[in-house]
Image (tube, rainbow, N blue to C red; front, side):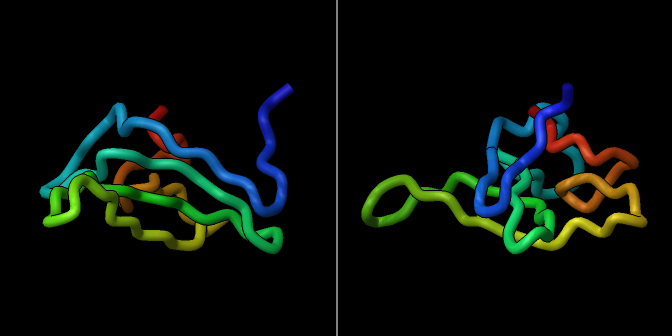
Length: 78
């Protein structure tokens, strides 16, 4: 049985397949109000210490594009 996200939940993990000019450090998916979203995160250093910058975008059910906008897979990379 495959893992299925419940509404209001998500998961993140290390990006095992970094590609492109500025690949995300962490990637994953979440489900909000029945819609799946990709999550990408980049580790940053600031005056108050380490933090993560995030981008979130809806998963297009018809396009087979990965979490970073590249590739042919819906595998978040972990």
